[in-house]
Image 1 (cartoon, helix red, strand yellow):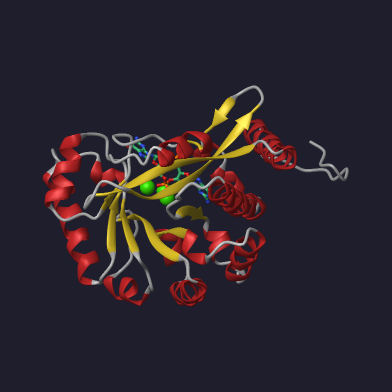
Image 2 (cartoon, protein in one colour):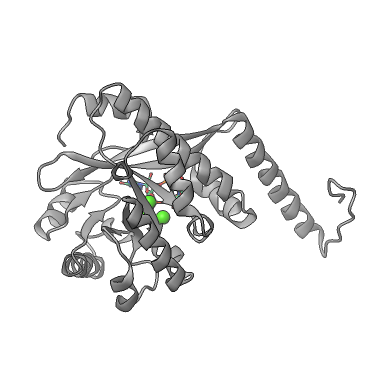
Length: 279
Ligand code: C2E
Ligand code: CA
Ligand code: CA
Ligand code: CA
């Protein structure tokens, strides 16, 4: 195979060659998608268990591919992360979310804070706080409009750097959530050092919370742990009223999941917020 610069590459096997070409094709397509503006954000509301109000929403990235349709993030984020393309894509997500918040505010809609997901590369880039401050300033937004979700594994890449970065972000005034909690390996000692606002229980434990005693034990322990650290707890992936009731009884603070709403386009969210929906 020939690279763009006419470099000659050698491959061990034909299978590896094909895999490489596929990856290169996807990488190329992702660059094009960014240039052509094919990415979109969908938003999923988050509901308070105390009063049923929409208290936040999570921005979730999709690729509106001209032929393939709406491509879910797990089909392209891992490669984007590996190649570093996640950095410009992540910046697009941040800018797009801020632009959307500004648009809703200009339309007179009472918007709760919007959470965006950060990749490990973005989080450990060393200038994330500056990038976020600029994006907020560009739309004239207060930092309290934005929440950042960092996965447990991202934070654990380099704990000292994570603590320092989180402190800078908190100083800006944004809220921080530890995402996918329970799937990684953060020790209690690390957790105590992170200046967080929320723990998000991973969907893996929520799905079977009413049927699997092990998963129920993890959810209960996470809620108690979070509360003892003065953090709020969000359960993600709530799909039925039994899960909702169970988590309510156990003191969970906020819920997100298909039971309330799938992630939907900005216009659909605006309609929900306008209607002042209580779920
Ligand atoms: P995540 O941050 O854990 O996001 C939650 C995922 O669970 C979303 O999948 C959401 O659509 C899905 N979900 C929510 N409620 C339910 C439910 O009740 N049942 C089921 N089965 N699923 C539910 P999605 O949108 O496909 O995103 C997958 C992952 O891609 C996210 O997981 C996140 O890790 C990543 N991701 C999405 N957007 C971005 C982004 O802008 N930047 C980065 N770095 N990663 C992103
Ligand atoms: Ca998330
Ligand atoms: Ca998750
Ligand atoms: Ca995740």
